[in-house]
Amino acid sequence: MAEYYSQRASAGLIVTEATAVSQQGTGCPNTPGIYTDEQVAGWRKVTEAAHHAGGRIFLQLWHMGRVSHPSFQPGGGLPVAPSAIAPQSGQALTETGMQPYVTPRALEITELPGVVAQYSAGAQRAKIAGFDGVEIHNANGYLLDQFLRDGTNRRTDDYGGPVGNRARLTLEVAEAVTKVWGADRVGIRFSPGGVFNDMHDSNPLATFSYVLHELNRFHLAYAHLIVSTEDDMRHGAAPVPLAALREEFHGPLIVANGFNRETATRAVAEGAADAVAFGRLFLANPDLPERFRLNAPLNSPDESTFYSGAEKGYTDYPALVRQLV
Image 1 (spheres, one colour):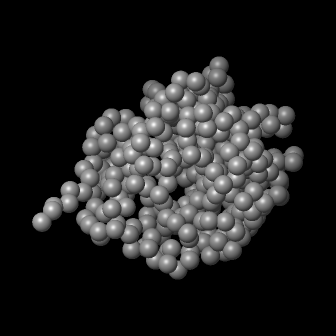
Image 2 (cartoon, helix red, strand yellow):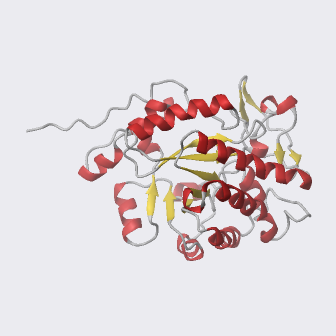
């Protein structure tokens, strides 16, 4: 991991892979955490390598919520969620292979301060590990996204019902994490139209407009939005207008999902976003900014090696070799 991130230090900002803030928040083999001293020590090697190569790096704070599995939970307990609603599509990836999702346990309202504290502790440990800041993962059907959307949140207390209640946990986590880092070192990620992990919302434009507007009070470093592509919409994603969300959030806006050199340049030039994030292209091209600068050919990502856990398809993609004439 240290080699992988140092290879990509030319990024304006590296945002790490999703990193669990607690054992309760884990739910997939070979994913990192930030809740033990050993994990902090491991991450310190990564941040030192990235900084030595001239990079800046944020840790992405993550809690999987209902898409975990009892095999990952303390004492083999049930995964937690806003409501006892299991995903109706997909399966949990466990150490013994794919397993059906279980129906999660709805968190008691008295437990929610403890969930906020998990994010705060993760943010504090990220600072000890040498990161430059953190990004709150509020996307892709994980715990905070589960609270925010009415398809997964059927609560009748102060954390359910109207969007002001469903957004409450997100705003409490943002407040706690900015107290650790200062607002200018904290970003947050959303997937307004996403359906990954069996997610949906009856009015995503209203839901995400509200939470983005409310986040203005914190003056965050940025909001990071996963936009829905045409392919996503063919698979059920909702078309949430980026321009409308851009009006609600007054800070810097990063967009991601399927951009290339041309479409990213256009998005920034037209003011649709202030920056564009890259995942697959940066995986396959450790020197992506230089390739973009030169309009050079790109390596193609090898999807057969994704999540394989070895060097192949991770740290062995070649950098561009410039021939001196």
